Length: 323
Ligand code: SAM
Ligand code: DTB
Ligand code: SF4
Image (cartoon, rainbow, N blue to C red; front, side, top):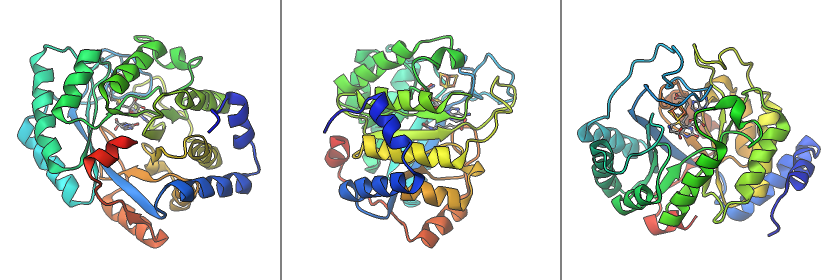
């Protein structure tokens, strides 16, 4: 398969809307069991007080967002949440910490490793998102049972410094390299609606297309404006721009799970249906994301039912890692 460039991505993205989504649908059908959506459950295991200044984030200590901080969640509470997630049909459990990154010998990291060892016994895909990793921390997470690491690039290399100044786009790439070298699959995507251009979104996709191995999952988040952050008050993203981006991602990375992530509370049911048609095949499921609201489980169940979409069944771990 030829590797996409900004030029080839723009050609796809700019096609007439129905041609684009039809082509994306064909790519989806060629690579995925049809009409199945993977349910993932998120849990914030350490909330708020983060040293980084990501302009979208409710958890940054640089902004007064009114969020109450919570220290590292005890093992038992995480396990109970993971068990409930499994019982509700989730096949991926993703634990997030509001850290700049991991300090290898820190007791808190050791505690996360212990939690991962226990959660991984439940047979779901185990994902963590803990900020920056050294190659050694990545190896330890892999050995503890992490199957996927979420580390988003969020936007284009050019726009990144408008959104974050306390670390660089290259820092993010370095962590992704450590994740790949440790043998975890990479979950990497972005946020739209932060004031970036449509070209910035395609430039991010161009970077993702250069990953080797390709990202196993690509979360596409729509900004959820957080009170007190510099991006509070940003208008919602245009639904056709979102659908075009999902379709282009499906075509550029046909084997990746494209996850319709944060911001579904501002999307209509019809809008979400278009996203699924265009190749999105995963959602976060449950009333809460990390700190923000998600559609309720009843609303999601009824949406999937009405569209005739089933939920992805658990896969053997070896297969889920093959990506
Ligand atoms: N601290 C870790 C990091 O930065 O990678 C992990 C947690 S961070 C909250 C995970 C991702 O959530 C971010 O990279 C961003 O893409 C997404 N996110 C955070 N706040 C968001 C918001 N207000 N709207 C949409 N997406 C958001
Ligand atoms: C991702 O791309 N989106 C998720 C997950 N990966 C960690 C997080 C969304 C967070 C939305 C805002 C919040 O809950 O604070
Ligand atoms: Fe911290 Fe992650 Fe939020 Fe940035 S996105 S402020 S690194 S928790």
